[in-house]
Image (cartoon, rainbow over all chains, first blue to last red; front, side, top):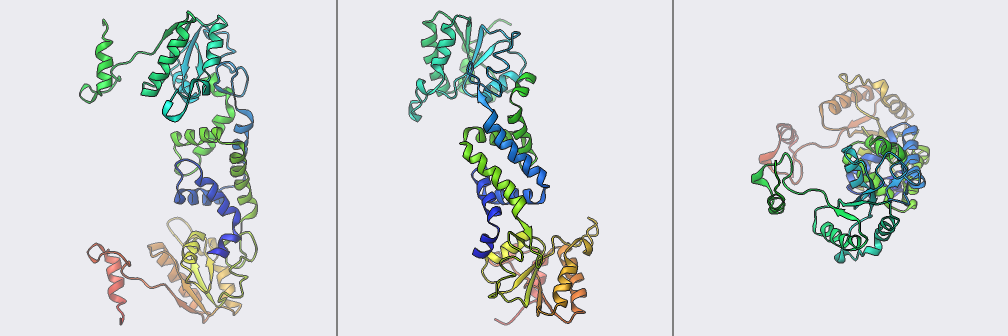
Length: 202
Length: 202
């Protein structure tokens, strides 16, 4: 096995590098490496180029910290978006989910995480001060705290509410309650509590 | 979503390229792309280089058709290996499996597939004629047909036995029977038949 392994060093190296990706086990890494071997060189080159381009071209928007190739990003620089409404999310992925609904007319602010005392993440590790500066600049009318409805997300939202409410900006959050399409009998206590407390006229 | 998609073209392209790999669904491709974004540039560069190197450096040994970076491969050019014994396998992966046992003192011949009339694979599509030439050259004493014990593998083995036996070389195949570590009550008909027909003194 030793001599064999040495003679195809590049194949072994490709397998081992694939192995470092999340969710790729040893069998999967081998399968991927053999797949690359069988595919035309153009495919390997395209994947290689895409990897490099992502690292070289993608940056964080200096206004909202969303991932972008132009700075400011296309949302922050879009005159048709309501620059007075800022949806605060934890991660760029969350922004994509909200944006895909087509319902947001405002802009975003990506925190790049949530406050987590257990994981040692403090407000200083996030983009909180940049959000405060945006609000202080006077263009922001309403901040919607669209953090994950989890313990850490709620904790982060409380901290932001504390900080932002002192600046005289309106602070809101998305509605909570029963998940549309779910069944009452399977609802969690948290979902039921939110649904009952938040009951509204039809 | 459209404006967002355009602004991070390289990220979208990386996701779409990951999607083309076997076993990578849309969620997985997104996860991998975001992972690359978070990792240091060195990691993306290493993966990119490994992809290119595999395509540029790995070739088939002109003797046995195994994957190699040197031609002939380290097994075919190893004076300590028995060049008179040739283990015929379907794929380079099968060679790795046999080689990993450390029990093979001979060399290999990779067919690059099996004969399959249904899939339109004829002997001419495989490395059969190169195997015949090796045997004709006079250095080969025994050919072990280590093909998969499947319908196509067995059919290919029969064809090779036909062709090779005319050349006066000894043609053998690995033993078949009960899978070591398995239980008799779960053995398939094929396993049992091979075990019964092949019974031997202890």
